[in-house]
Length: 302
Length: 262
Image 1 (spheres, helix red, strand yellow):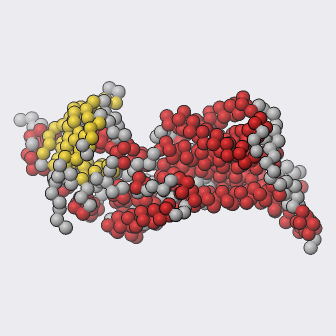
Image 2 (image 1 turned 60 degrees about the horizontal axis):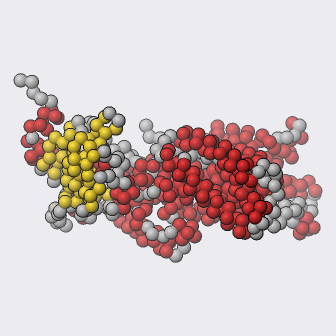
Image 3 (image 1 turned 45 degrees about the horizontal axis):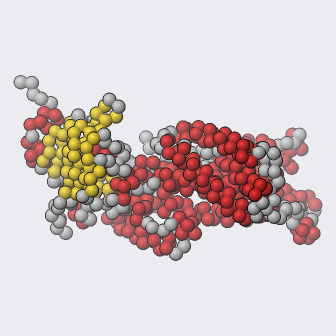
């Protein structure tokens, strides 16, 4: 087999894996959007905050990784509770745009708190997740496959399966969707808005923790981590804001598309396509299919 | 099936006053409903009919007065409490979960009847799954009852208005309510749909023994199906009694037809 072909495979695999990493971030957005109709601007910062807390607990208190992960998950639940108490509770029945503005404020607050508590230097996150090339792929096929990204793919697949079942099959999942649709109607059938919001923000916080772990292991825990939220945007536009599987497929398309564009189209236009290709793709998609691949089409009766 | 006799007082609203800033929506309104009764609230637009329903189910908290439901007296009801103690309702401007199927909408009505914890649900195993299936059976019965079989998988946003109204009734029924509040269940319907809805309301009352309070503008319907009629005007109680009494009441005639000038 020609080296050319192997290179194509390698590019594709690395695209798929990068896509999985984007999907992890996009998932958090989808969860909150599905359950409350809010576009949560603070999702990227949640990832950062979770990763910072995790590293902080391990460094400052010398806790083992697994314990630190459990504690961080508890912290994220606490954050969710506080968000509901201090912010969302006062904004019941408000327009989505007002809730969106509130999440912008939230992003700044969380970033500030993270800075004050854990400091702003770049930290290394080492949970013992294997990194580097997969040996057998390298030896047998001369393929470079990153171990960390394989782990990330497995974790993402697991998360998505659990979340999809949770949303489709259970009472709480249905209550989440109900709250997203109509606050008043949800209240009238006895759904407690407050506990639903705490639950969904906790789940989003835990998804953020997983994304934070993967990205933090890959490129260190630093404040620019919150910017990966920007890469999740085109993923959401492609996959649809309300679809968990959409977040995954969208991520894969963006990841692979980005790498192919960089390698095969890049040289023709002077390179560096990778940075903006995703946004162009999203823009094109908005023209053709604004609800995304799997999003719910909004039907308005007039 | 013969209709069961009307029982004791189920709900008693006494001297309720509700205002928003300077606007008084309800002033000194009292109102009772007995078990298995169909009570109607009528009155011109802005008379405070919906406000009264909102007070009963806890969306609004009145400034004054008290509400006695099933023997417990409170100065205000919380929405959650109302739902838990068996009060279900529909809305004037249909409030369904538009993106969800008819089936899923009705399943939300079972929300309070389900007991599995969040952890059990997260793994969707054992009790959580059994429970889901049992409730599904109950909901399918309601779907049969309301003739919604053909649309059960369709997102409600796509259904015609009249059918949506029926789905909303179904969701309220799924909660197995003791007291059902219907806010203009027949508004905007054509004659045939109105006839169907009337029959459903009567059947719900007879077969399930549910007490019903409804707001309706169609006088023929109101006089036909209700046991007692309460008339509100400008937030005040104007008259109360059987349909015949209300029909003959001079104050009601004046409010509806205007006072003759001769």
